[in-house]
Length: 166
Length: 270
Image 1 (cartoon, rainbow over the protein chains, first blue to last red):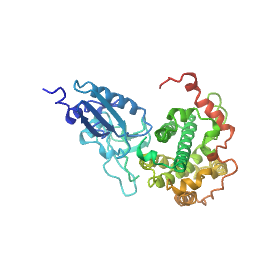
Image 2: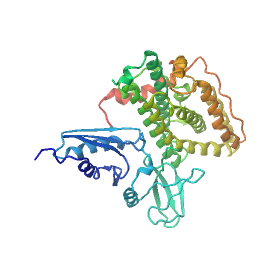
Image 3: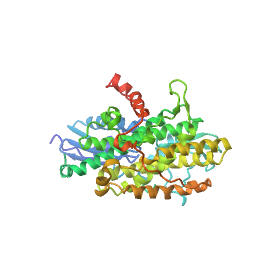
Image 4: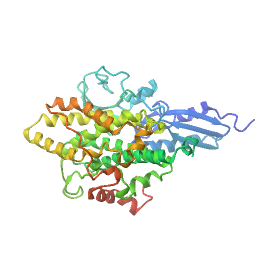
């Protein structure tokens, strides 16, 4: 059998499903919509990643973890991971599985739609109530906002929607 | 070097580098001055917001420095930390200190000035990014789209502060009006491209100074109307044009502080 016959894009994606944002460990970078292209050529892998927020200190860690995870595949020789800006990361790239993972972490997923005036609404990450108020559009990390649920009286976070229309 | 880069004329490359340094240095100094507010903003939510905005903005500066590195101008970290003040191309407005005192001792920073400087600069950045989306240099156009999405939230935040303080007490109104005068006095070089004006505009890297100024005035007019004020007129740049490397001593002191750790231990990571 050829030594690298089994190195496929699918194999790499399986590995990437286990690479997490270090600050949100319930969602893989695939489900966050951060993975652009995966290309394999013989024993080499090239991956492009889409940065969520440009000043996010987790980006370099994610890049390193991506390289490390792929290198664990015995058939892999060289790995190249780089950030690209085209296409830009937008919050609608987060998958349905990503939405579930965010809620499990206490973060409401970004809304799929904006109102006509550009505002948006999310429900409580814990109890699902719609009776919430925005405490701060900015939060503990660049991608999150802080909200308060008037039903279950919890402070919770929401991932900011990001769209090219902004 | 790619074919596209080697095909650049010297004039084009100089103009592009000059513009990138202006964008990078503006965001770098704005982020640095913003970071000096950490722990000092009027309340905790404002503190979280301003530090988040500063972190985003430092990320934007890093992108522009990276584009410069890609052009062979030097390593991004070096460009950020170690260029002397006379090589810096940021607007004077963004190097100004936050107020009297040193942040490690007894800072008496001016929150009204922070709000007004942020509003004026964020609107200027927005009209530049809108134009950079159409830049002839595609890597810059790509970065501009990404930066603009983050700026959306910065603008939203500073709009609220601007309106609330100008609709507040007489003391607040006076402080805000004083701050507007201070910011306006330094606003002349924000839309200047300095000595590279012709080459930057001719090569389609970004819209002309005049067009950007006009867009800024139109964009910010509703904000001034909402507080019953007339939109201020952008002054001409003074002799101290930051785009040509003319700066105040505030910049030199700021650079000495911000590069201190890197000078002590160049391998330090955070």
